[in-house]
Image (cartoon, rainbow over all chains, first blue to last red):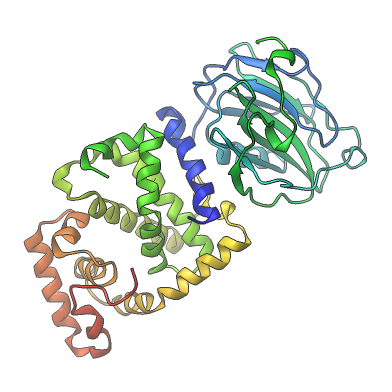
Length: 203
Length: 191
């Protein structure tokens, strides 16, 4: 199969695993995953290309919510690793140029996938916090990245078998992900292995 | 894939993957026989499989073998796209196939589209046939289905399908250029 066929298969498998209510257009978070946060419950998203990583428990439900706040920031809630295309579309609709790529276990995007944005390019303005909402969803708030910067959200299986979610920033456009086998225990976005046992408490 | 397994693809990702790997090329070729834009081919291929996931649980053996059922879905998806284009309306698809296409994919899709050029010519040539007759003729002459399978794909009986096929061929008798392709039960194009 071609790269397109493989990428489409990844998206379709996510759709199969999504609860039926989330297969339609209107999606809203209902149940939150148990989250293991890097650096604790209020880790700060790095204003750099380094991915922020947190873990989602398996078997989660629902999908996502994106809210444009009155102060111009954007709050994202991710409840499960389903419907990457929907989350990407929603983020772009509120002004965040984003690429969302969810991957099955044991897969990663071929590295280097994109050109990381340097700290100077982001200008220290893209910061946020990671935490859990009252209903348990993983939540982070960001300021809208400047023009030419793309937010990248991707998943991978963590070293302990957890589903890990990584957030990074790319300079310019992000090429399509070429799905390849991931080395055992490697982190999201091609980063080093992340040991969940030392990265924070279970949320 | 066994008929009994078809209902599982709506909830079992591994079962779905088996079905997908078995049929993705068939679906792409089906679309490429009707559409010459690689991005639209990508979109519609995604749309067909989304529709498969949504409707597999309602599949019944009486609707024919899975491949005939799949062709019926693919035909409806392509027809829906044509209606949307006619109204200049676009809806937000759940999975936008075109966003998954890279440069290499684009070349491969162009190659696939070029390989189906004869079929698209035939497809365009059939536009003046009544819709029901055209549908049967398309599935048999372009897509290689048997009369029984074409009937299942369209939700009609084999006798009705054969009658429509006969009428369609009769109408085409004054168009010999098309008749060469349209009078065979087997496809004359690469499938």
